[in-house]
Length: 63
Image (tube, rainbow, N blue to C red; front, top):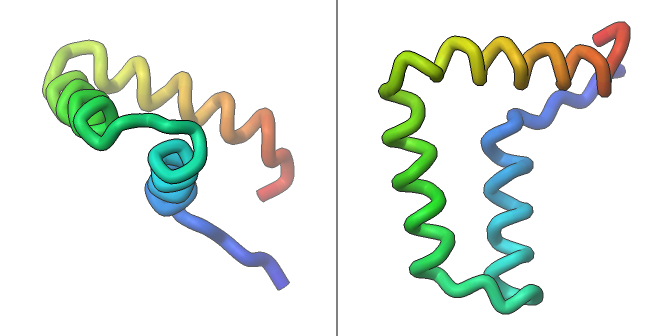
């Protein structure tokens, strides 16, 4: 049986842990989220998507 966790949930949990235990301020996390949102609307977004998919394929071979 394969258990699949969406990447956005995993990153969200990492941000939650960083806010709670690593003293990441909420405003810093919000600035990073806004930056990611704005970056997704640029011409660089498809290249970033391909790079992320290649990395995930490398990390999880055979999935």
